[in-house]
Length: 391
Image (tube, rainbow, N blue to C red; front, side, top):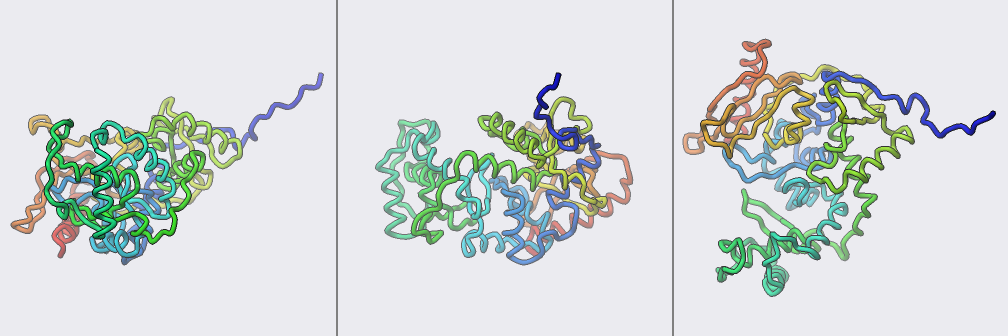
């Protein structure tokens, strides 16, 4: 009896590829552009290229050493200067600020993928902005429209509303933040943590905003961004802190596997956690990575702690909020990557009065080649100090 052929995948497309951790690390480091000296070139254009490739560069308020967004870019652009990011944001307008899993710099070319989230913020507000009154929102928007871009310091002191949980915040500050998350305002300039807000349309010179991406387009965007910057991906790594999209993302991955665009990956040590990659990423000729990188705890290679542990057998601890007695690595510890392996963790602090970079604690992760590694790490620290202090 003839049976109808079942719609199975071609063997080459359906069979999982097995890869060891060393190969997986090389694929990820290649995707992160941490396997070569100056992957994005030099000058202001390198900053735009880096943000576009990585998909986001996280912003953080901690100022023990250089702000993490500057350090992430310096790690991949040896001649990076802080003014390059200011130019990208304020003059070239090739990057903008918004929320991913945290507040981040994002490529302006990708802005349409965030318009739906902005519309949701305007409509639903959520608990954080539930106390914002419409009159306060209208007031700050009118001020910006009439007087031009402004900071919170440009708004006259106003009475604090005592009827909401964040009574220490002025209504104008909360209204500015809501207008930002809702997309009516954007950050046109940043000086440290002081943000200058401008009307989004006026900042980008829009007659009308771009059309928002559909949910299907957003899913494609998130998957493509992860494949570009992670190489080997899981649903968890694609939808980091975005659990509601995981089911739809699995279905999208399955469609791409059926089309032969992705292959399942059996990653050493991953047990039951599925991974996928593009065939060309797995087949690429990858040289052993070289170089020393001091990584911010908010670097894209470090921020997903479970993934970092799986690939590098290193469990990073962010200890800034732990009591001193419970710290293993230090207040603001940073992994040190040498030739593709995390070999040490160093706790750094900038003494701005004495113009020095202070080494608070040094913890070795590996016993291999400590003397040679120490020499190279110290050379990298010297260069990092020059960058820290703007020399």
